[in-house]
Every structure is written in C-alpha cells, then in structure tokens.
Length: 67
Image (cartoon, rainbow, N blue to C red; front, side):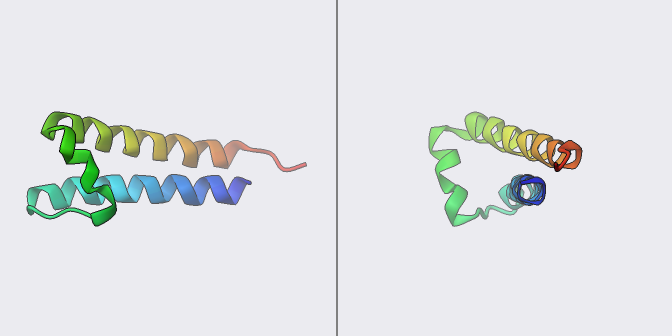
C-alpha cells in the first residue's frame, strides 16, 4: 500500500506539473484535455489540485507503517 500511494502521488504530481508546462506550449495530454472544457481558470484550479493531491499522497505514503 505504501509503494502504491507513493507511485500514484508521484504520477499525479508529474502529470500536473507537465500539464502546466505544456499549457504554455499550446499542447496538452490527451487524457487531461477535459480540464480546459470548463474554461482556463477551472483548468488551472484542477491542475493545481492535482499537484497538491499528488504531493499529499506521496507524503502520506512515506509515513504509513507496515505491520
């Protein structure tokens, strides 16, 4: 469970940051295109939430103690 949370968290963080960078290059990931259908402001809010949630999952995965 610990490794899975860290992997998912890192993946969300990476996709969020790369999506922010690609936005300025007028590109986007196909799987994340739906974010901009609600407008640019909501798209940015969703990207930031994805980055923050990814960081939280990664840190949570570090502190889970296996029994």
